[in-house]
Image 1: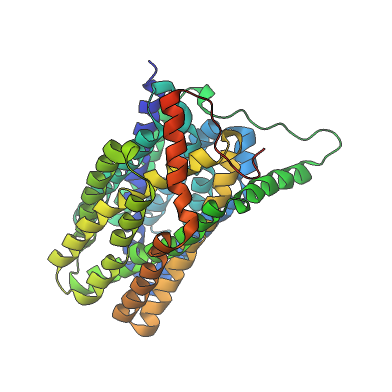
Image 2 (image 1 turned 90 degrees about the vertical axis):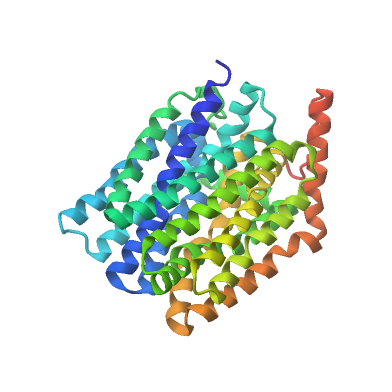
Length: 428
C-alpha cells in the first residue's frame, strides 16, 4: 500500500500530539494548584522547554547520523517511560518540586531529539501521490484535531480525577506513536550522513555539520524572518498557555474544565481552518492567508482575557482565533520544504526551530514573573500589544513576498512535471 506510510505517520503524530496537548495543560494546572505560584508554574515550563530548544539547536547532525525515523521511535519509547514516572512518583508521595522539574527537563530533551519527524512527511506524501501543500494541511489539521480532543479531555479528566492521571495517558500515547512509526518505511528518511574520516575528529565533524545548517539558514532572508517572528509569537503563546490562561481560569472560574473548554474550542476552530486550507491551499497565494490568519489568531486572545470576567466571550474569540491559525503551519511548512534541500532539512529546519522555539522557555518565565509583579490584566495587555506588532510584519516587509513566489514555482513544477529547482542561495 503506497499510502500506508503516510497513514501510519499521520496517525502516530495525532496520537502523540493528543497526549502532549493533554499534558500541556495538566502540568501547569498541577503546579499552579499545588504551589499557588505563577512564577513556579512558569519555571516548570522553562525547565521543560529549555532542553527541548537546546537539543533542537545542536542535535541536527546526530539525528542525521542515527536517522529521523529511528530517532523518533526510540525517543517515543523513552518519553513514555519518563512521563509515566511523574504520576508514579506522585502517587508514591515522592514528587518534590525539584524532582518534577528534573523529570520534565529530561522529557523536554528527549522530545527535542524526536521532534524532527516532519522530515519524513515529504517522502511519505510523495509515495502516496499527495501534493505537499495538501499533506502539510492534513498534518496540521490532524494536529489541530489532537488539540480539539486532547485539551478538553484533559480538563474533564482533571476535574474527575487528577492531573497526574492525565500524564499516564500521555505516556501511553508515546508508546502507541512509537509502535505506529515502525510501519513507516525506512526509505522515507534521508540517508544518514557520513561519519568523519580518519583525519577529522568526530567533534570537529559534528561542529562542521552544525555550521552548514546554520550557515544555510542565515543565507535565507525568508527563513530568518520566519524564525524571528515565530520566536516572538512562541514566547507570547507559551506565556498564554502555560501561565496566563491557567491563572485567569483559576481566578475567574475555579475549575480546570474552563481551561479545557478554551483549548477545545480553539481546537475546533483550528481543525476547521486547517481543513479549509488543505482543500483550498494549493489554489491560493500563500502569504495573505498566512498573514491574516496570524493576525486573527494572536492578539485578540490576550485582549479578551484582559477584558472578560465570564467564559462565553473568551470561547467566541478562541473559536475565531482557531480558524485563523489553521492557515499558519501549512503555509510555513510548505515554504520550508521547498526552500531547503532534503538532505539538509534536519539540520537547517532544526536550526530554524531552535531560534523560533527559543522564545518558549522564556515565555513561561516572563509570564509567571510579570503576573506576580504587575498583575494579570496588565500582563495580558502588554503581551497582546507585542503579539500585534509581530503579526503585522508579513504585511509590511518585502521579504515575505517570497512565500508566494515559492508557491508559484512549486505549482508550475507539479503542473509541468519538470525537475525545476527552486533558487536557494547557498544551497549545496
